[in-house]
Amino acid sequence: MLSSLSFFTTDIFFRYTPPMNYLFNSFCWQNYHFLCIVMTKIQAAIFDMDGLLIDSEPLWQEAEKRIFAEVGIELTTAMCEQTMGMRIDEVVGHWYKFKPWTNKDLKELEHEVVNEVEHLIRTKGEPMPGVDHIISFFKNKNLRLAVASSAHLRLIEQFLKN
Image 1 (cartoon, rainbow, N blue to C red):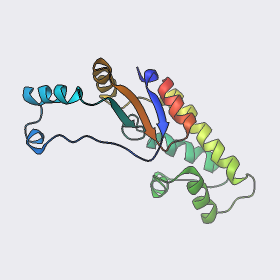
Image 2 (image 1 turned 30 degrees about the vertical axis):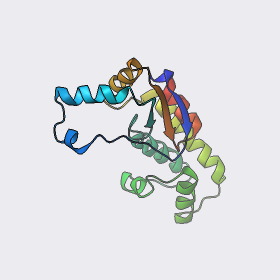
Image 3 (image 1 turned 120 degrees about the horizontal axis):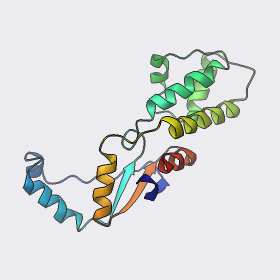
């Protein structure tokens, strides 16, 4: 299902919000009918990957804990949460300032963390609840589907393969 999505990387995420009167009457037939009418005017749906299509944060934390342990930094979940949302180069720089290491280059460590996250997405990554349903819904409406993410392209591709 997900492999049929196209993707591009960007920090821009588009949303559609229906008029306020429909927000107060959610889950009724009229909203579904309204949604179907609106769908005839929308040509594409763009999804953010992290946190919407997949909860990747636990995978990032697992990878960071394992890889940073190799350079002598035993990360806790609370420590990982301090760097949540940062790019991997920023995370590596942050922990290098905290406790410098000499056995690995910073870029090498970045690469190892991304490789580990890619492996975890392949072996443990699951779509968030409802993702398959909404993608099927949009596909049945013949909408073009895309993923917008600032994640590494390899991670997006791996998730879409799953």
